[in-house]
Every structure is written in C-alpha cells, then in structure tokens.
Length: 151
Ligand code: DQA
Image 1: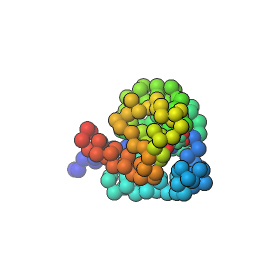
Image 2: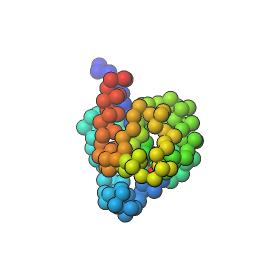
Image 3: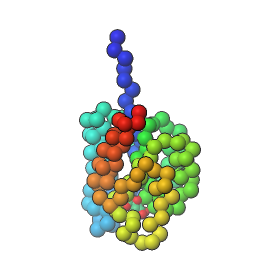
Image 4: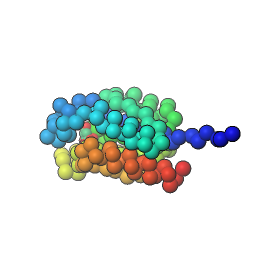
C-alpha cells in the first residue's frame, strides 16, 4: 500500500483594506484585484503540490486568531497597515513559531516615514516589497523553495 504524502500547507493572510485592491489608490497599488492575486496563487499551489488557505481580514483580532488557531507549515502575510503598528500580530507569530514571509505590494521604504518601520520584518525569513502583485508570486516561490529545503 502506498503511503499518502501529506501536502505542505501555506497560510496566506491579507490585512486591512486589501479587499479594495483594484480601486484603492491604483497609482500605488495597481488595478488588479485581490481575487486576481488569490487565483494566481491557487494555481501555483496546485502546480507545486502545496495546499493553500487564504484569509483577508480588516480586523487585527481575526488575524491573530487565524495565525494562532490554524494548522499550516508557513505563513505568507501582507499585514498592510498593521505592519507598522501591531504588537498583537507580532506576538501571535512569535507564539506559534512558524516560518513567515512578509509581503508588500508597494516598496514601504520609498514611502512615508511611518511605513519604513515594520514590526514583522525582523521575525520573518525575508521580506518582499515593491513588486506589485509579483511580490506575492515571488513570496510563493520563496515559500515553496524554503519548504522543500527545510521540511
Ligand atoms: C502595504 C503597505 C502598507 O504600508 C499599507 O498600509 C497597506 C499595503 C503594501 O502592500 O504595500 O495597506 O502593506
């Protein structure tokens, strides 16, 4: 009998206001929608034999609950505005001790000073910032590479 291989699971979290992609400040964030991003990553997951769960939430508490109550091998997160403020999300990530990749559509270091500080970067494997929707594709490839090497 063939043993069934467990597929590695990636949890992808999009923080506040990212549900508005497509219409939100298109000069900064572009014209594609969150659905476009999620569909591309779901396709990539299928191709790479990984499982993917996606959450978009505008609520810090819901994000903390998802990070701490779900089963997954690696977290890809665009914490959006919470990047710069949320000790709660930082603490949730530290509590579960899972590998994390931080993602931003815009280059947070090229924008207002308050965006240059991330509470997540120093506890992440790495940060991908400034490539628009390709930031997510790059993050997914980095995640697949990391999981292959580590797990
Ligand atoms: C963002 C950058 C954050 O500063 C901002 O609050 C966002 C989106 C990005 O993807 O570029 O909502 O995380």
